[in-house]
Length: 511
Image 1 (cartoon, rainbow, N blue to C red):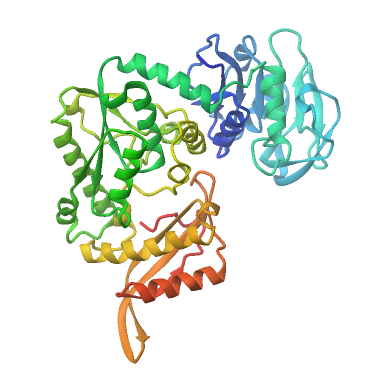
Image 2 (image 1 turned 180 degrees about the horizontal axis):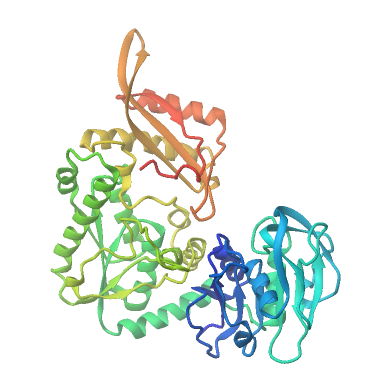
């Protein structure tokens, strides 16, 4: 098994960024809530304590037994974690005169392995309202900034393992050499070998799948998306055609996508059956305009179709899913189960009556890691680089009631937009793009005739993982070309607008 770093989460908005920084150093890591018991096995090489919106001076402040961890492993503590370690060993943490937020210059006061290859006055990112004002005995100052007395410190090694603390956030983009500091902790202090690569993941996972599945059969719903395709390819590599894929046309896929995806699956050798269920979905969605109701109808009908197909494959005892790591960690908060989980999500939803055991080969990977594994598996790059597409498809990009006529309008407009992004070399520069059909008609003029037709909104965002997103600053010339092309080629649409909202406060999808 691969060596591992454990990240204890105190509820910081940046915890996933810590994990990503560790993974980018080719070291495997896992996030778990701070209150979960730590399993100290031979694969665990070190522990990182995250930041938190809480204050260490609150009565119910989150806490862990830092001394117990140090007795077994090296520890890196960040922001709240650093304050907690200082307080627990007898130091002082006090409310700052003002909230310290933003860029600062790190002044290195003492050489230390954690700052190997780090320049003095390196830029770091602060985000805290408390500050460490007095370090405990047997701790020494490593760095400060112009405005705070303790920006970096270490516990003088007397017994146990090393403890380092940063008041700043090395994991964020604005800490220019922060990832080098994290790498120093992983390699120089924890002794990690940095051997967790896409190739090693494929080899280990295929071996695990062979052991888990044995001579059994797996049934799996495929969406044409990156996650399910990579998961299916891994399973297929392990068991061949004993993987039975099902790809359902729910009537709200993109233009020609059903056949294109089936052709692609055939090309990469997957055993997939296509099910044309458009009319069943159109009947179920008729007259429904509430977005949540549309999502639930699509989810239920998909399960109905899947159950029908699963009942034909009695030999299948396993269910394959494309669950990825954000799906797993976002379903558990540091304060217990999350209150809100997406109603159309691949973590669950299929009935227990199927009596199938789960196979989730990607549940430890972030999205960008899934893509790297897909390329390692030889899946075509144009498939791997596809934009994310919502589970309910165009149903949540048609605001209001769904009809076959509206789906056709949106499919044609969206195809022009997506193909245009590719032709202009813009597709790979945005994280996700799509067209939204609005429940709004407006007056237009074409030739000598007045028209009264639909409006579409074009949406394109830049993002790393979809948790936050900025609207993509597409060239005016491109947007003008898209507007003209859609209006001229899609009868029924006479107005095109561009969405310049970021997430937050808006969401990427409109529904």
